[in-house]
Image (cartoon, rainbow, N blue to C red):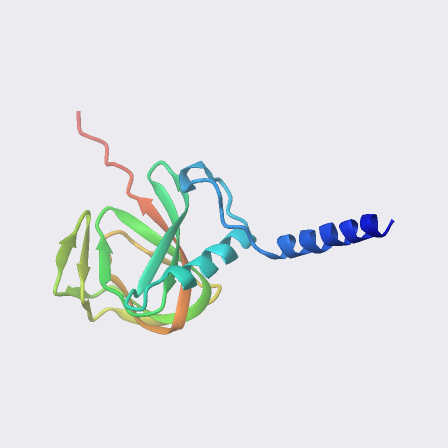
Length: 168
């Protein structure tokens, strides 16, 4: 009887410990249609561990469907400013806060694949963003997190521009 009670106690304690730990998403982003709150917590914990000391931004893909990509961005320092020429970008602040500059002109502009980047932005509009805020950055608009208050965790969704119809 003691062995049965001890075994049952071990199973219950083990089950409770496992239930308290969020599981990282196991399926690749292209196969997921949902990311739970526990998955997001696990991704944030992973970013804290995986981010290197000199790495301002660590991004992880959450969901990918065709040309749409939802990423979790863990930012702990200022990174480059960017312009996405063919896609808008929607940010949702999951946690933390920062100063976001939109508009203006990229400083020291260079091409980075399909996008432009720069060391910062001249001009533009600065605003403080914090947990719960949504921000839409239209395609072609410079944007830059010019100051990070500790860390900021963002959900970003790139929204490709629909191709323009060709004239017959």
